[in-house]
Length: 268
Image (cartoon, rainbow, N blue to C red):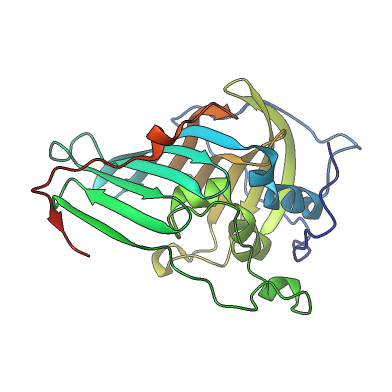
């Protein structure tokens, strides 16, 4: 595996500790996990490798399916992403198939402006991309205080952003857990690293439980997250998986257009 650039800096993860046994999942998981070899990266090296994931391609096309189990039942959200460096991105979010017809949202950016269209409300918007505070990447800041500025921005705090720009997830969630690199596996034809994170301490209040644990698969070639599972005790509560991935496809300017009719309500 290629060595990450020296500018990558992340806190050292917690030492592996006793982890709960994996629970059987009703959805496909990475098959045939092979124990780590002596050449396997450390968790710190793996997180640094993940930080640079978006720098390993010039364009990207992926489909991400997120299935969540809750007291209300099962809900499924599908994300379609087209990305071309620098700055060009389009995310189409399709909500549960049981939702009303046309339950979708489109987010498009050229690196300067963001345009959106929400089919549920029948409204569109156009606004400048949110500026970032100055000084957040200063070299004299400690690594935990530095903010990674992506080459191409995606919707903030979205699942797509987490999978393509995993630095914040590694720094704010994974390093708070008891971690273990379980080994390598095959997921939809790609080789992945499988990581277990037991009782991460960064979570919503309702999930802040000692029996909560995560399992994720990291693409060995690019560093992208391809699978994220959340468990509470022996119950699988979330299964988010990249079901289609294409690195460096040809994406023309027309891909990043947003066409709305003249009678659509414009918010700003």
